[in-house]
Length: 156
Image (cartoon, rainbow, N blue to C red; front, side, top):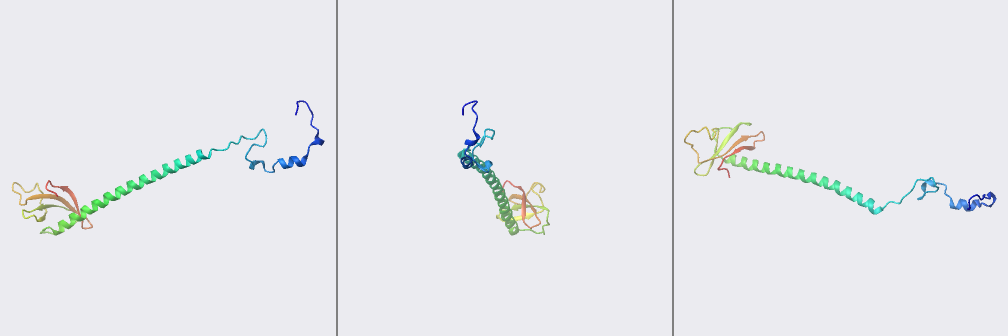
């Protein structure tokens, strides 16, 4: 329309305008008048890229936590295996007393390669030691397994 020209209201075709207009302007994908907010189509590749990046970051974090937990459990399992093996060795060793829970004892090896559990520590013997080798200082735990407190230089 030219500037200054008046609109003839009688010539407006209302049916044609109704076909071009919407009853719900908030649902259309483009601005419907000059004061409308600008609607820009989103780059779907960019959205997917951000989502994939966030997903990878989150799953990597969770996998790292699981890996750390597995390492901790593997370490605990190894410690338990060592305790079991030491306990079996001590229960096969010669002992002339009843060990008490929570007390420390000392494991030695004789010349004939048999083990003996003693209440006397390696530094308490004086000059002459009655055993070939000091293996370990151990403590009897409540579950009747033995924990190594100190390994001797001859420990295998």
